[in-house]
Length: 177
Image (cartoon, rainbow, N blue to C red):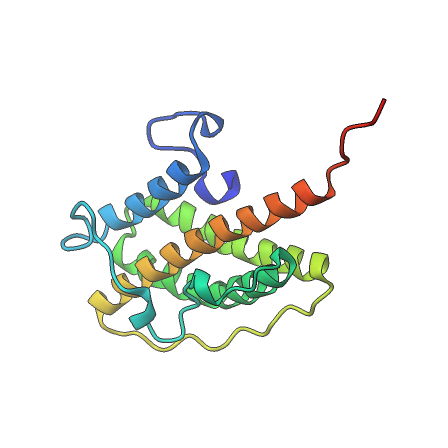
């Protein structure tokens, strides 16, 4: 997570903030650089309307954390291409926002590492990324960029939950006297 978020704007130590709060800071930072309506408090967009984006529907995930992680692997692999496009768009739209670009680059790298690590853990091949649709309109680039970051945060939360379950299941139980 530190790799994704980098240093916080106020210089706060990352370890002092909750995981969820850090993800919110990441999304808020992206949105504040997009202008209205993105920068308005409470902005949201129905992710399922964004073509080919791997949005998380918790109701479609298997109950097994191992099987759920296979879905996460697929999502991170798809997000690699989406982050590359988002970075390209944001470099044009926000060239004077180095922290934003640094966080997006770190998220792109994080998605690559997560995809590789999950593939290794699950002993699965890394899924090939589908081509990202061409997006030329600035508003659509901003919406898709938001969607990419929101999906990434959602999948990070899901992966964290799945890994916590697996760790709890494999921790040694108390030793009987």
